[in-house]
Length: 201
Image (cartoon, rainbow, N blue to C red; front, side, top):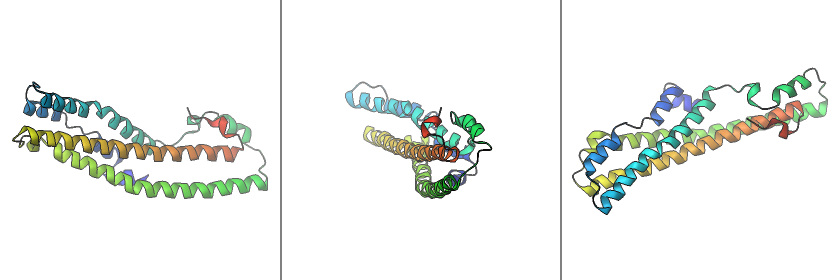
């Protein structure tokens, strides 16, 4: 998953970028908005609150990707795999089973290449969207809003960028999760155990 490792100097930097929510942006927005006395201001105030509430999903997706990238898969992470390996250890592999394993390894390499191709598009997209969000959310930009309409435009733009980021991070999680499932299938092929034996925890 070098695309994430190389998107910044290290995976932790990528996480920091994705989860950099600029702590006081909503404070500045609400201060510029003023008291929510009319319907338009009430609606805008609710949109600002929505920006904050959606952060947990951004963090959830980001941390899931980070964990996948930095954590090497362990035997104990796949339910039943350790026991299956113990039974498999020393077991003679016939030519038919060996061919099956070889075919699956080839398929796994193809799957890995597909994952890399998808991430090559998705990971830079996430970085671009996040940087655009941070640029719009810069306090100096918000303070330049001279009217309610311009402030509402900023809030709307932030919502669009955050929704786009949420979507692409979810897509990255789905790609990695599908790849993880292929690992489980490979484990089943190697040990010649039914896939149902390896339901992940």
